[in-house]
Each structure stands twice: as C-alpha cells, then as structure tokens.
Image (cartoon, rainbow, N blue to C red; front, side, top):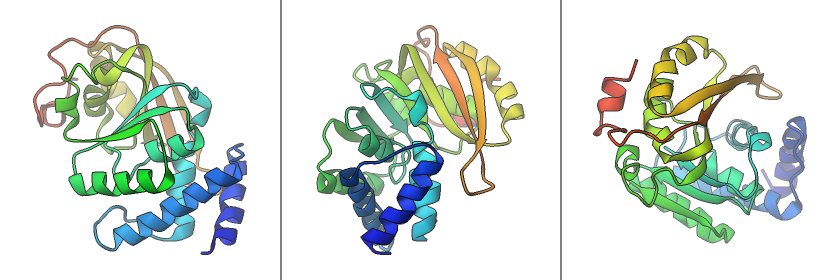
Length: 240
C-alpha cells in the first residue's frame, strides 16, 4: 500500500468516527504502520499484519476514544504492546503528555524507534510491570487518564490501572461488546480501588461487526497504599 492509498483509506475510516486528521499526522500514521510491519518480521508485535486491518483494528480502534480526551491531559497506557492505543492518540493529540508502559523490552525498543522517527515530544516509555511502577511516587496517581487495551478481566485490570489515576481523573479500558457480566463482577474491585463506574459506552467499530465498549471509571478517592498487590496476585486472586 503506497501513501496515497493509505491516506485515502485512513481518511475514509477516520471520517466514519467523525475525525479529520491533518496531512502531517496522516504521514506519521503511515510511517508508524510501515515500521510496525517491518519490525514485526523480526519480533512478534501484532498478529494483525494486513495493512487495511492495521488501519481499522489498530489505528481507528485506538482513536475511537478521542471524544473523551482533552488535549492537555497527562495519560498512561498500561500494557501498551505495540503502542495501542497510546501512540495513535499522541499522534492525533500532540499536546497530550503520554507514558507507554509494557513488560517486554523488545516492544519498548520498537516504540522508542517509532517515537524518534516521528519526532514526538512529551512521550516516554517505561519497561516493567504495572504492579511495580504503580508503587513509584513518580507515577502513582499522577495521570488525568489511564487507558488500556490489555485483555485482563476488568477487576484485575482496575487493580493494575486505577493506582495511576489522580483523584477526579478517569480510567477507560477498551473492552469487547459483551461486557455486562464483567462490569457487574468488577464493581467491588473498582470501589475498593477508589473508583466509580460512571458509564458503559457500547458501539460497533465502523465498517465492521466488531463490538466495542468503553467502561468510564471515575477516580473518586485515593487508592489504598496496599494496592496493587505484588506481581501475579491481581490476576490470580482478583478483588470480587
């Protein structure tokens, strides 16, 4: 796919979610896609390698949250993988101050290479476990927004993510369309961790039959110091 083909398809898909991306940002997305495909031949970054699917299932999917973001937010993306959703959001909103956290160093190396190539500022990567950095005063309760496309159960994911959110901030995980039981089962954990489920927004990714949900969790009080628990505990024994 050349740049002209990419631009045409990307703009069409972006229009479906009511976003207009300026030319210089479209070029950054194109370079990001090319870098992702190139690096993916050496290290496993994504199972999605078709260019049209990368646009749809990585870029556009990441950008569907834009209406809930202010461009001066501080934001952390927990378990970012190949940079989704944090890196597309940074490209779209250059004034965002973004932290990308992942436990695999090879992914961090890829992200650093993309950040350098695209000349992005006010974005940095951290390599390690969410449970460890959430205990660090430099990161704990420092963010207006935490996002995550990680596949953990919502109760577990809340324990990883809510400690990063400042009081009155938001944690918004990207979840599948079938979310009702998971939300119900996470209510105790969210409350214990200082959050409150404000809304569940369900929609279909435009042009697909892929169901999506945003669970909007408002941070109403500080997270108790004992959370998150030590590595492995949030997934083995979620708060229920």
